[in-house]
Image (cartoon, rainbow, N blue to C red; front, side, top):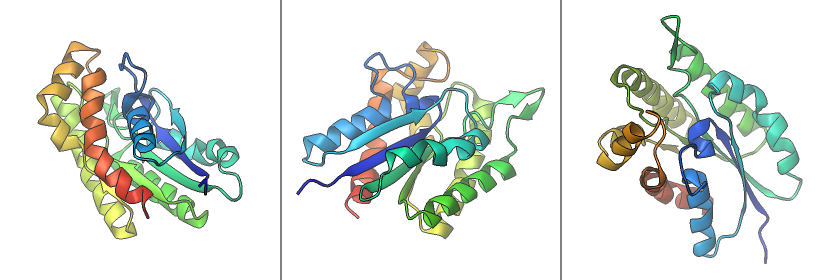
Length: 199
């Protein structure tokens, strides 16, 4: 029997797969891999470049609602944070406490609507100071998800230690990798993704 599995991936440019010449990013790789193991799904990539957690919180329900019709197995994958930690006039675009509050609110809203959620940590870029701020968010996000019993995929530190990811980021625009970097990110997420889909 066909299961009408629909997954919205909402977030920033890393969700959108910016920098990947194959135009797949990690989202496309996960979706294609699911088909390869006999799990068809409809994947909606709702990544928007430069968006912060505040902007993503503000739009997710309006964008996902028409993609989640009654009777479908509706799921949500969320990833954000790097743009929150970008400095504007010496201050992060979104304060760490507000980023944490935004994630908590998004989790609460998805729970109210009965939409299972998977959260993916913000990845590193070629900026050590910003990475330190993002790593701090990663810790806050992990604690929030643990308290809410929501699966959280900690990719930040493994990617900072990855010569492939960091090498492609440096060779690119300083933030986004190419195809091999997205291969690495998808590989980190995949076991958590498959376990989550099986629930």
